[in-house]
Image 1 (cartoon, helix red, strand yellow):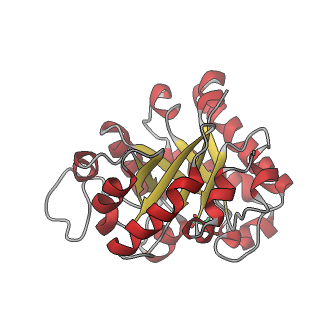
Image 2 (image 1 turned 90 degrees about the horizontal axis):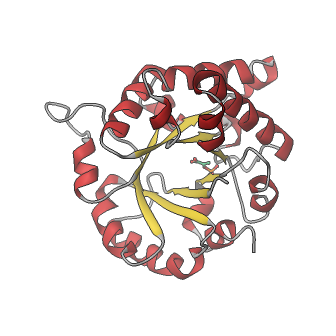
Length: 249
Ligand code: PEP
């Protein structure tokens, strides 16, 4: 039985001091033993967030990471900078990073490999644009993203990763994919992982849905057979996130 994982993606929101306040506010609201709870916060707030979350069920994750160990990469964050402060998760290949920072499937793969090498769980994002959905190539597109993201990743490593299916047209738009659309693509992702690694890995890997998830849409989405939780943007900055985490109560 896969444990659900619900992660907040804070994006470029909240200063370090606001981070402490928000974590204090959300801490009592996001208790749920059935769910792994992750707050992915801006790099500058990671240390503060780790402190603020101490003693709670909240794990802290980064929103990005570079694929080299160290060196002349101005502005980047190395994996050992994350592990040094106890960060356990990192979002890789969010569509906003692909769109605004030229991330490609190839850099996603490099980052996934590097995160795994350092024992950090990557939350690997994939998703189609509205045009691709309308062209009927959603599944082909996602399969290609997955196959490249997992190049040279072993079955044992793959089983520990998290995939976030995020239709780009649903991110920050208020348009949630229908439960059927979300389940269909998450099932196709699991099938693709099965083809690459076999049944056991496909059964173990956790697949999230992301895209305008709210307290109202979460309960139906998260009980789908292939949806193991969510990656939540806007609603993760509000008390509503507590309701999303407690979707099953
Ligand atoms: C996201 O940023 O990953 C996301 C899903 O955002 P939102 O929930 O705001 O659509």
